[in-house]
Each structure stands twice: as C-alpha cells, then as structure tokens.
Image (cartoon, rainbow, N blue to C red; front, side, top):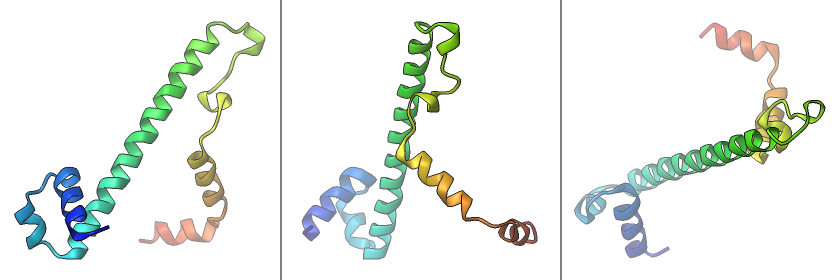
Length: 102
C-alpha cells in the first residue's frame, strides 16, 4: 500500500484530515486503523448474529414441537464462536486464581 493510499484510507475510515494524517506517527495511524478494523469486524459479527437469531425464530414457528431448535447456535455456529470455546478450554484453574489476586 502506498503512502497516498494509506492517507486516503485514514481520511476515509478514521475521519481525520490529511493534515492530521501527516502530523501523526506511523504507529498512531496503524494503531488507529487496527482498532477501526477490529470494531468493524465486531459490527459484522453482530449483524450475522442478528440474522441468525431472526432465522432461528422464523424457522421455529414452522417446526413441530418435537423438532424445535433450542438456541440460535443449534441452527449453525460461527467459526469465531468455536474458536472462543477452544481457547477457554486451555485456561487452567490456576489462571483464574492468579486473575482473582490482581
């Protein structure tokens, strides 16, 4: 990515002026863009979760009592939900004890 493209991206995504871009350090720009894209990703995840929830309710009204889905995750799970579970499995009780002491 060229410096002009980075400036354009920063002006568009971060809503800063070109002058503010040129007065910022590269680390400030990269950190701000990192936060921006993380927030964008979280927003997209939230939209997907809402779509799944809507589908869950719309599907359940057409299913018989013995075939009802209990949770939206029963419909389908997102990859990021599975990743969280595997990461949490690796956390030991000692970790939580150390966290409580902080």
